[in-house]
Image (cartoon, rainbow, N blue to C red; front, side, top):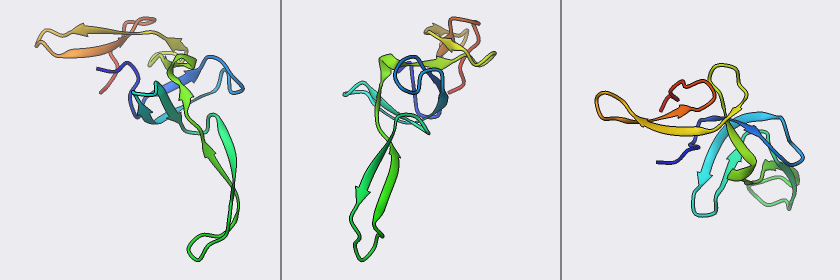
Length: 104
């Protein structure tokens, strides 16, 4: 089970977007990276083709998992993630800052 998953709200801990937050679009566990909406934006030059028009394309670049932290469901501040088992034996993630379980 991964600590950060698609759809989670995260806060950037270091880099040019430090302090900003966004939603995780995808996670690449083998590379230890994630794509976060609106974070680590890059500009790519696109050549015109029959199907696509040319110009400057802005898109998200992957950011290393060590540079992002899950946003606490209570106050939105960065928190570490822990795992615990509920009464029915289900393994869930919880925010170590507030102790709340994380949906999903």
